[in-house]
Length: 82
Image 1 (cartoon, one colour):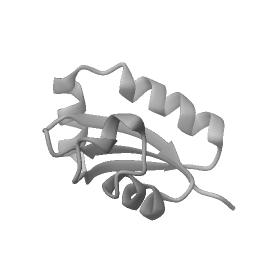
Image 2: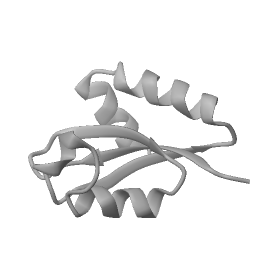
Image 3: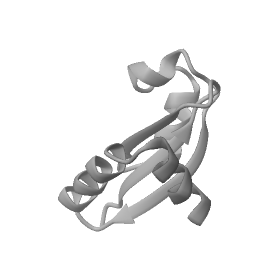
């Protein structure tokens, strides 16, 4: 079974980035190496602040969308829960 993971990174500039992957460790390493999303390339190093695992891609993608719609304050509350 493949894990489908939604994650939130904190970039070096303090901004938050939300993404989806099936291999969390690899993806965070890619972001940190400047090989991830265009948004994070100039904002390294990054730090994993939050993640959730799902059994299906559709559930994970729906949750990614929900998190991306949250305000900065709401995302910080979510991060503080973990």
